[in-house]
Length: 17
Image 1: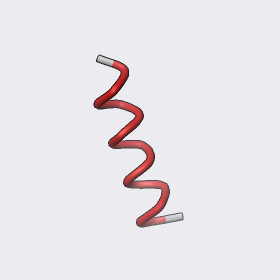
Image 2: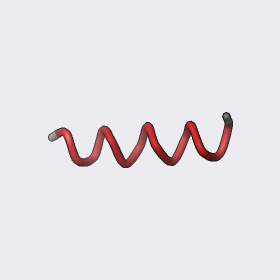
Image 3: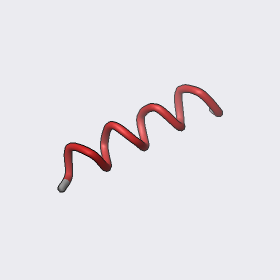
Image 4: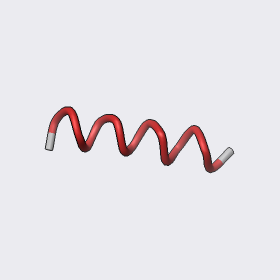
């Protein structure tokens, strides 16, 4: 499940960072 991880990380990094 790499897609979910990349999507989650990308969303969090873009929202927080």
